[in-house]
Image 1 (cartoon, rainbow, N blue to C red):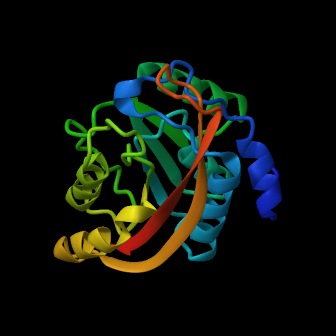
Image 2 (spheres, rainbow, N blue to C red):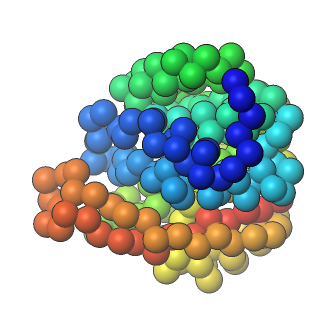
Length: 209
């Protein structure tokens, strides 16, 4: 496959990755837009966290970070998600792209204990954008990242919780090096949504473990 040399080209590739086929409200499944995923992956690549590295995409959904990392020269890329429907689509997409350095695993994060010697971990966990969401799921993912002992973590969170998160990361011996800020669109995919689209301020924290 021809090497990707521009962020726009990466975004165009990621646009072909489908959304969650059957979004499950309990999992708070919102697909990361290709424009956000490509920007974050490009930044991670620029920081030396992608090329020739082993990537883990925890709570991967249909695999946008696992696939995007593979396209940018990752040594290996592993996606993990509890949702079998999403994993099936992720496997189909990586197969069509003929990516032989990607694999996807169906597993709850509590039961997942195979880090694949990951160097860099991406995660876009349920971050509490729903009013009745089970709060603290993103913190559960951060704790799992610490347990898996990867080198670098990129994790999505609600921007409104930034001050608390900085303390939480420090308490877990994580050194925050960068904070990326995005406007995350939440589409109308669940029955309780009363707007066609809502924009939520999110941050992605890059931390060294």
